[in-house]
Length: 266
Image (cartoon, rainbow, N blue to C red):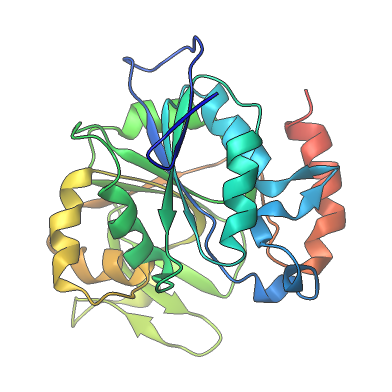
């Protein structure tokens, strides 16, 4: 294993999509919903069936053909960095986006992470570390690689939805419990919109980084997408057979054990 300039660099043959597939894993969160476990470890290293959540995400990305990954860190950052320097994955360059000076939220974190990728125009697949799913990431990447932004969504029930028009283009966001709506369209008819739940998996062109320069240091990626959706076409990829589990709460850990046995341990 060769470590160069703070990056974990491990080389081995892989099957690539046109030789390039890049990804970023959001692993910097405080994991407050997983307390007290996250009082002594980061959410990314919470074990499920004896393996940390981060390992499942890394393995899925690398098996899908990823050869360049950025992982952002903040909460118990040294533990994640130590893990990445010793993990057994092959064929991928993993870089650390260290947010210890300031936790940047998902939008600010992505903007910082984009600067660590090489100058390729290939899109970045963004994946929350606490999301387990059955999605074929290679196919998702390939069919959406020419879009500016694509959000993997589903029809699962939730209180917060992304709003799309009949062409599955993003129009806004709503909280069904409070009635709050965020949209750049003054006359948006929320009832006429298609309502989809966000999966925490999305694909973004690195060219979108320039639009982030107008945002503060700390901002949400969903707020960013909603703010620019009247200027940039942001597409929905609707996972009709999507099985997804958000392992962000303590009561999801038991379900996660069964989920990884069905979809990951094969």
